[in-house]
Amino acid sequence: MALSSPENQDCTPSVGASFGPPTIFLDSDGDLRLRVTADDDHTQDFVVCSRALMRLSPVFKALLAGGFQESRPTDGEWIVPLPDDDRGALLTLLNIIHGRFGKVPENPPLEELYRILCVANKYDLTGAVRPWASKWAKLADEAQKDKTGGNPVMLVFIAWELGYQELYVKIVERLVGECSINEKGHLTTLKGLCLEDYDHIGPLDLLEKIGDSRKATIQSILNMFHDLSKALLDGDHCHQRTTAPKSSIFCDYVIFGSLCRATVKIRGSLLKESADDITQSANSFCYVTQRIIDSITWISDHSNCSPAPRLTGKLLEALLTPQDEIVTPDHKLSMKKQRQKTGLREPLHIQGKAGGGK
Image 1: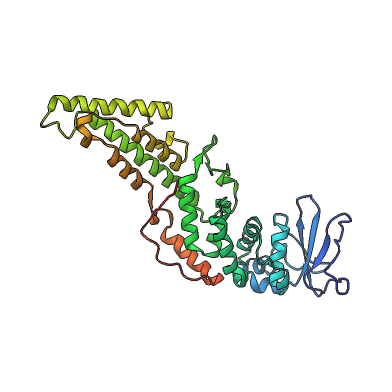
Image 2: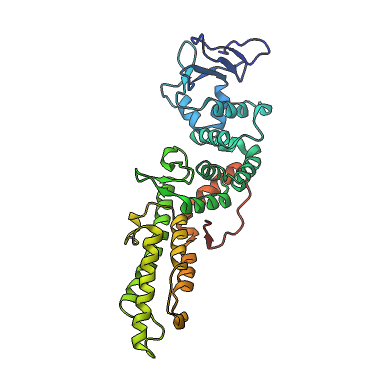
């Protein structure tokens, strides 16, 4: 039975909600009322065609025709509550489902695009946004190139949901370099965004991958300094120890002393043994350690004994994250499946390693 609507109008006051937003009719002959609870605790009703929803969304098909309590009642109006959905994002997708393409935003703000794709993910409706996917992918790419950098947490999910692999890799690398650890032990961006506060971010193991890569980068830098310190204390560093054994010990001690002095002066303490004890971001830690390297001194006639060039080279190597550590074959397969839905082109070949910026 179709639900009545005003002639040539989209809206009428919601049933049982005298002060709530008016009901939005996506289909004047709609047989289903979706009821969304708004942020102000008022309800927003959408009158829709149940068949249209079930044709495009496997989730709605299971929900409405799978024998659950949301299935069509034997009598009375068919009302399905959706208390956890974003009503603006849901409306955009309902407009697409019902062919109201003129009401679909061509250039939505990044946050709105994120919310649309969160709801699309929930109801397996990402394929429905195919006509807009390329334009929205370009918007996300422009956002990450903007001087503000956009919201990396939203960007990584947008890239994931659209199957935009190149952008996904860029943003994950950025998060590996930029994220620090807050007082609760959670990954946090430069702008203080806690990754665990977001319900939608990408693959289930993404936080683990970012955390492990960040920790591995920092640990490799710590190991580099501790290996140097051991060699200096053992008298195994000076390049002239075979020709001038006495001065070689002094050479090692001078470098070791300057290394300790610079570390305490710049960091306030000596370096920890484990990356688990470092809360700052990998990029910030690299910047600090480069300052330490630049402060190392050596005996004037032992310039070839300076560890600085080798340390700087190893520091740059530490910033290079192998792609397969953060984008697994399963991740690539998932994004390929998303591209089949959205119509985005296949990614260009991505080099085996990609560097993280400061």
